[in-house]
Length: 318
Length: 256
Ligand SMILES: [Fe+2]
Ligand SMILES: [Fe+2]
Image (cartoon, rainbow over the protein chains, first blue to last red):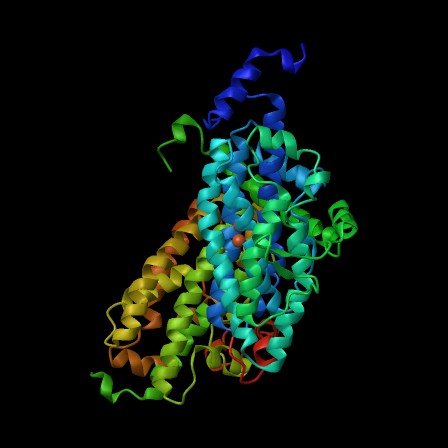
């Protein structure tokens, strides 16, 4: 194998990227571009799937039928997002089952935010508001990512995520103008979810090793820190509208920068949670494996049935 | 034969019969969110749960309107104890495994489809409207259950024996679907309710055809377990309600 840099196709590929042409599945692409995208899209798909758990945790206890319907529909949307993203990843030559296997064996990650527990009903609203809000900030930037199928998936997904965000905000608004217990519930949830939400954008630009190449390939268009800042700027006024306090004494409007300043993020906690020591890492994977192994006989039966009924002679009978 | 001779209390209870079936079954299906055997089924089961929840909300709201005592859908869903629930015993049975979920779906959706197709012509316009919309949904639910029943019944040895076990467990609850009771019969006479006994042949034809395709059998006689309509439930309902109602009841007078 000659060095990748010697491959003339690589220069043409970069030129095409620089000319803002989107990369499509049949196009030639550097193996590292392919691998980076597989990893990123898979991680994104896994996050949708694992994200169903913390919120699904409250479906059966939703305190009104209207909220129950909204939450059920939301969790269903996330399953749809997962499926859609796995399909996008499959255009790069991997199968969904390989990816799910890597999720379940810990070889691929999902967003560390879902390793925190949903302890009260207010967590459902807070996740919608902050976590879906952060996801939209990220994904809006990804609607212009260089890989076509991923970009198109993001356009569709963003539309639904913004629904989720509004519904979460509305749920919290209801709590914050409710009884003292409801208000306290809302504030407690925001206290617990604020910092993990900021961590969703990943490590600071200075210590984000893969970012430079991703930016060059236009997989990533906006840096982690810039996305984080956009999120903070968007969210602070919303918190004020809710009458809830964000748990950061250093959060202040900075006249000269035109942005909100905020306090230091606990990156040790981020690393800890990412590496498996968060409150729910083991539980999330346990539940996923259990659903997978518990459903194995069903999938096997479906395959066996399809095989029996795929004979040409039987083709029309069904 | 006109609706004005009908007692409001009869109509209210009948709306609860139908609404509670939807509410409780929807809850059972919602328990499976993020636990289905494949991601496509997470989406499909949520769809079923959402359809049923929509029907439940319309029917409970209507029961509250007819009662005219100021109870809305939430007061009825969260404020009643298990002895005040009127759902069929079938729909409260747990998701022991996917086979139980599917057999319960097949039995109920086939029944509900037959029911709604008659109720579409009810003299009561609200029930007729719920049924007209619900029939389309029930027809999809029946197809979903039928597809899985055939695949699992005729899939592997294991899937077949799991389906047999599920049929064995759930069959005893089938008789209650077609059991007449005085309230329903009075409403049948007024052209409002569907006669449960009349639904049985349609239901049986559906089940027999599907079971034949799936290579499954069932007893000739319908099961005899009953009591749900009059509030005598299995032990499972109390646990379901304690989970469903806990948060709502912990905060009296709160809005969500
Ligand atoms: Fe999503
Ligand atoms: Fe979402």
